Length: 364
Ligand code: ATP
Image (cartoon, rainbow, N blue to C red; front, side):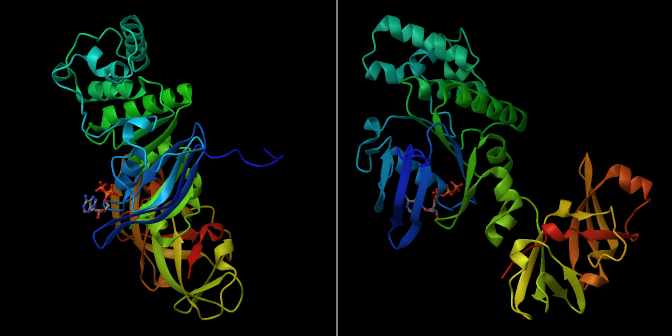
């Protein structure tokens, strides 16, 4: 490797297309994943994330494109020759086999001798937090326990790649959160390169080194959770990942000036600095980027807002406000219960709010 060059990707997807008849489910996916990385495919239903995972696994054949794993072209190899373990949403354990036989399934095919198999199964069950459960059967286990067994089975042959297809979505909320933490810890401990499909943003953010946001068969953005959330590359990402306020505006005469009706606001975000005066734009602003304090005197971004609706969310309230300064358009903001009580705010109250200039991202 030359000095400063980044290491070769462990998994490389190049120009992956998938057509189902005349429908293009994947429209040319290019993606490099480094060894040991945990990557999540995140996107709405039908965006193609499961199809992409299945293509990596060899369970679906791509219409075009190339897949490399550890420098090897695996594009046309059958699943058994691709060196991965996989966990599906439905537990997919063999109901008639004991836990030990389920976990050892890949080892039997791999002709590992019996003594090593027994030891490996013991080790794997300890790894997934179910030591001593060898003799039990899937029907005697909870959903979360069954997914742990499925995980142990997927890891049995120490594959280079772990594929997870919505492994948590059939579980209840508490188990889901606990198990995702365990999967992440296990992945770190083993250093196994992992790709997980999910439609749950919080889940992706909690586990992934990088999130791949997909929409209609294409990648919209690849980045860390923070980047994807704070600097969404497209309006789709801004809207799909978290809550967002979208306000139509036009570019003013000066860089960063944004007009809503006759009122001129100021954005300091780089995306707002290079538009021709009068150009139609969309301002995107997260609820937490509209603040009740501090309110610098004379700031053009401070508006008088009227409380329209308060939704209690526990630690904070989701408050919908409107303002004449925004042409009566609504904004959603987060306010703490303490603040609402202290300021004696209720539906119909007025309060000043500030649209943070450095967070006012603009799309043409
Ligand atoms: P979900 O979260 O709902 O599973 P997804 O993002 O995983 O969605 P895919 O299952 O990859 O989406 O499907 C992508 C698109 O391809 C969908 O429009 C789907 O209807 C279509 N599709 C998937 N498999 C087939 C198939 N075997 N035949 C025809 N169309 C298919």
